[in-house]
Length: 90
Ligand code: SF4
Image (cartoon, rainbow, N blue to C red; front, side):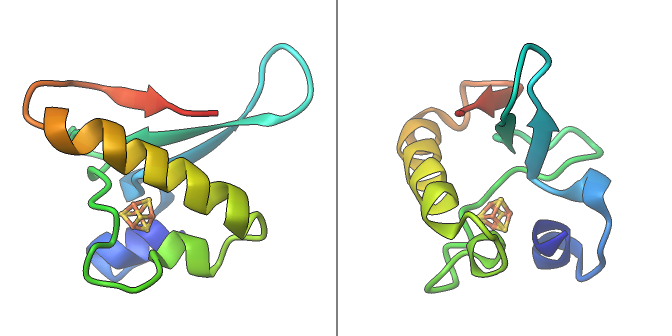
């Protein structure tokens, strides 16, 4: 929700760069970060203009999400132009 507000100034989950999905094979969840906009979801830009990314500011699992985002940005930044599709990081 926070992410869609960051991108569109509206709460539209389908526009978010961040998707949290239940694992199909057991407990826990998957965090997907969108690396390329696809006409629906918007690519994660890491909220570079903020000291703390908006999703992290409102996340109950703030420390975990912060680590996930740092890894995502390290992987995506140099390859952003070459890659397509979401990246699953957890
Ligand atoms: S860091 Fe990425 S996922 Fe988090 S609010 Fe910003 S654009 Fe969305």
